Image (cartoon, one colour):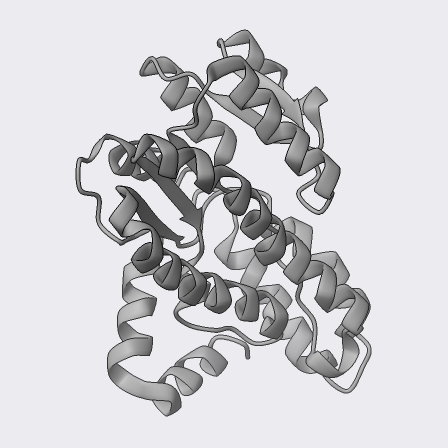
Length: 259
């Protein structure tokens, strides 16, 4: 999703810096006219160096898109706190530190947009996703508070809540989840989650990443963007069901898909 958005923004004429751990996978972005920075979002020195490099070269940062994140799945009982802490380091604390370093520059220019890529998982939940959903629920609340704090300085904070998108998200969390819980007391549930994940992320089922890229571009272009955009397969529907039908009905609907 991040690369798709970066390519779209470059095509629209924006100056785009793509920050990633695997810079060798960003050559197409560079060939399109983007600029690449090596960044591990859990590394304080790299985070600081990233912001310093952009400011020294461009003199300002108008938009920050916090897209880094991954999904840690497995039963709470089966997941080490070390793994859980790393989930928070990537999905919350890394983007929070990057935002802290960007904010003084946005305040100085009295403008800016901070776009946080959350998930429909920030408004609902799925089995064996406790630590992942905890980070996305945290990101939603953190973003709401930040929005109020920085509004007087002309800075907008936007939350984007993707649904099922045709990326490698499902592949990335599936094997580690089965290693944690595939043979534990939660094995039946883990197998059910695995089967449902394979179905949900089968080719052609999810929305293309361009759906989220378009939303990001729309939020950037808007003079007064919405505080939230839910987009992609199942996002609006599942958030609606969770919000208006309550816990018990949502629980029942979820578990009926895991059999």
